[in-house]
Length: 205
Image (cartoon, rainbow, N blue to C red; front, top):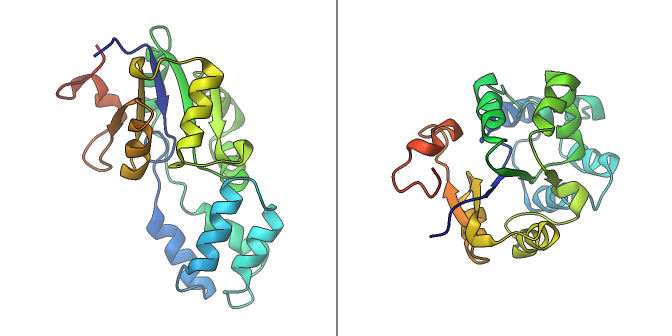
């Protein structure tokens, strides 16, 4: 195995903790009980920046008990929990030795909430750790589609065998492996990104 020179990170549950139950409970309180095929489809389109914020929120609104768009947005953002400072510091310590990228399936509502919740200085400190940040809603593509990995590899002229991709979703790491990226499928609740170098058979040192 070649020496790792580049690391591509996911965002949610790698750096910022996510609380899916909080959003589920918030929507339940608004009358939205079950996440159906239409909502799944509009969510994926919104993550790819293919529909507007208003279209996305209005689609969710149909399944609530006359909740306002602001209430729906708040329920949607309930997912976003804490961002441990130790993870940011870990990332900053990596920066001199590796070329770092962020590749996240996310949307404009969540990113704005992260900026508002943690403050712009914190967000910019995080953002500046990376050579480039890739958000699905800006790229019009999303994981686990292979094309998104091919795009990053090509645009950054990366050697996949020298590049580690870290994500908590198995379907994403499996897809990344198809284009020869090295992968770590981080197990949320059992592992932390800060333990990267402590992993058995860790491909970087």
